[in-house]
Image 1 (cartoon, rainbow, N blue to C red):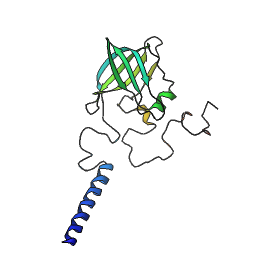
Image 2: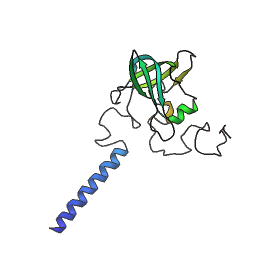
Image 3: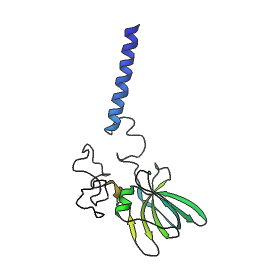
Image 4: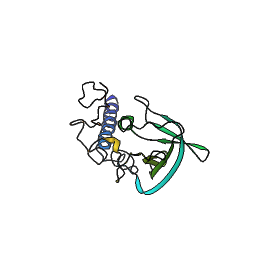
Length: 176
């Protein structure tokens, strides 16, 4: 009886481990569940929604999760998740309360909000911040990331090379 229980436990553990490994490699049942590219939900750049509103608040910072922009759109507050704070900081994105912004949204059936922010334009200044490439992949993912690149790990580093990282010896760092 003990031998049968031990054999059963070993089989269950092996199956769970194999399923986890297959899912991480992009195969198996977990990999095919929903529209995924291996880096996150796929978006449809052909399905565009435009939103214009006034900034209520912008929350984001190191260690604070995904930056969120809250706009007053037609008297109603709407929240939009933007992406990497490091990318936003490197692009000098810092909207102030009251700024009028125009957002270009692309459909994303697998995203909690139903869309992703592809582009933000400050109506007053005309400044444009692009968050997504034409194929829908996030620009904040770094070079080569988000385009089906698997198994490369962190070869050569994948973050922005603009001095916004934590390395004080970065040759591109501008704040001393």
